[in-house]
Amino acid sequence: MVNKYSSNKTSKKASLAEIIGPIEHPQAGFVPAGFKLVQTTEKRFYLFRSVENEWVQYGNGKNPWFAISWDYAREWVRDIFRKNEMPLGVGGEKILTAATPHKNEGELLTDYFVLEDAAKITYTLADYLMLQGTMLNLYNKLRKRVLNLSVGVREEIKKLYIAYKLTTNFVDVGPQKNALQLYLNMPFEEIDDPKKMCEDVTHIGHRQNGHIRVRLTGIQQLEDVMYLVQQAFERQNRDEAVA
Image 1 (cartoon, helix red, strand yellow):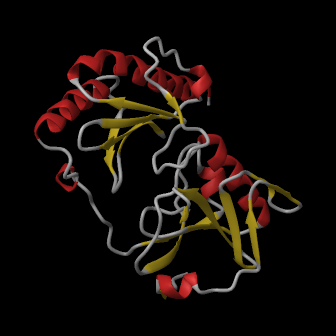
Image 2 (cartoon, rainbow, N blue to C red):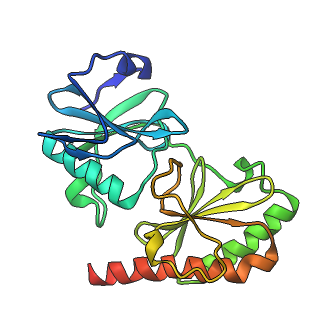
């Protein structure tokens, strides 16, 4: 099934239902604060999250995702909230295709449809203008340490951050002018943080994955930061072994 249309047409469609959290909805279940579920047709449900006081849609960074029933929409909201995954936004022309199942996501994504661009966009480190001089050197040292955690660690360069993952992200790195901003994908209450470097962002909108934010500003912090990163890595590794 292929259907090509513009993002402008999509945004102007009238909604059958618009559910803004926090609310317990009879069909969608509990929709948390900062989330919005929009039904545009009988079998199309879009999800948004408030980021810096703006509604940002869940998608692949350019094209939106949607669920095809109330049941799957309910599970989607629950899963996104549990993982504290942030939206990347959407835009541009789209082609409608069935989603490809992934490990640990098959039950969910098999029953979604994903709008994917016909031309895949590839990002490189050169797209991160902040990665120059001292910050580039610091990033390269961090990158080497993270990749050395396991031969199974993969690096994915996204539009807004650089992800390190086994099956799912355990740390996302967002380069800034004077720091590398890391997001650790584990509950804040589980982290051992003797230097008090971690910030709880469970209920704060951001575009990366994870409940914990850490700023790396200099090489002297690298050992302390890697102690935190290793905990997120080991937690995901342990969870995958159990699964």
